[in-house]
Length: 299
Image (cartoon, rainbow, N blue to C red; front, side, top):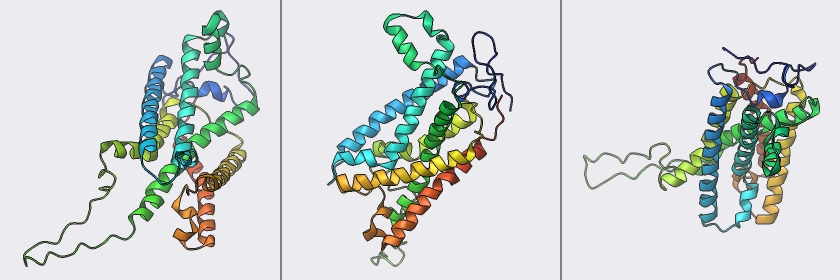
């Protein structure tokens, strides 16, 4: 991959650290590709953030207007909403950092309300803190991994359970030469409720993962962390915490975040436990997938 140097050590910018030559915060604000300079990256990040913001409005409209026997509070416990929220917050942060790093490199030169806004949008002051870098890279990894997990669980488990066994269409006995009815085409149920519902579902369970893959490949040059074990433990912990959050949601709203959390649908408590273990183990597997994508060298 052809890359461009991130920074120089002049102009008050931080120099190399012992573990990483540039802080992860700065690397999140720079593309590893020479053909994507800083001003182009700001435009690209702005486009992605605008798209995600529009999708947020559409998702909210769809979720809040869809009739259900359960309260709308259940959406706070929906894994798709949680993972989408993490992706949205990540892109708000990285767009703010990229924008201010390019156009407002010296925050102290601004004053008034503008100064407060720019300060809030700017890179952290203590960028050399390894602890803060760990927290950010773990948040970044969680946003990516949860989006991958969300897509995997929906397309390979949830949809398969909802589809069930396909029913063979009854033969047409009115004519001997009549051909049997064709079965439904794949994804016919997805587009059977209009484009709006399909657009929301595809974005929640597909496009967000694609956006994060583009983020990994083109939008940032964050290096793979040295504390790999700590990241894996953190991802497993967050996956387990979500299952706890889903359990709280069941107590509060009576709604199961996943059908496989419902013992009456999977057959036994042992099956629920097996699904939960698989969900938690999916986190490190998704992280491995992220690392494979992230094997591009960065400066």
